[in-house]
Length: 208
Image 1 (cartoon, one colour):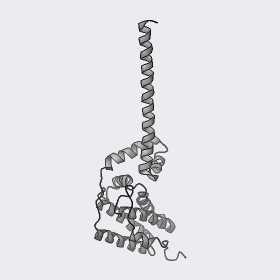
Image 2 (cartoon, rainbow, N blue to C red):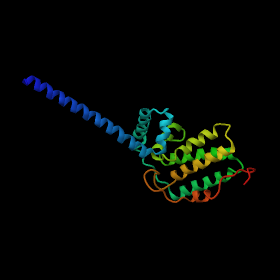
Image 3 (cartoon, rainbow, N blue to C red):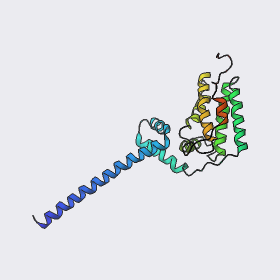
């Protein structure tokens, strides 16, 4: 076997090994990236896949862009007095649901947006950016804000749909007013939750 032939064979083998290594790293990177995104975003991961029509690559790009834009946010602490005020406001709007379901849900939307801004997320008038930031730090509960917005602005939502929206929103309220971010640690017990969890919201005339 000539020297040239030997060199060509070695070069071909090296090329094959390098190509295999690149392919393996690409597959490994994609897999670990998927696992990381699923672990971080939880149910928000599946919702994003669905919103992108099943296009996993587009959904991953969307989620990574959100982390890049908003992952640096460190939620501001709530003073105990401020937290108590928010608890009282939530209790009030929940009680108001009995007489005015749509208004109560509209108040819940505004309160959630206001609390998010107080915690250091984008302001309430930047709806899309606020939702994107919340999806990074409160991925398991951000759908509560989307739900109340869709429901209260639909104009055709039934009382039952309004009730379900407010229940979803309450989970985000508890997460936003907790002492720690929802995905980063254990939340404190919540007085508003304890008051509200003992019964379902029932508007007047709906029966037991």
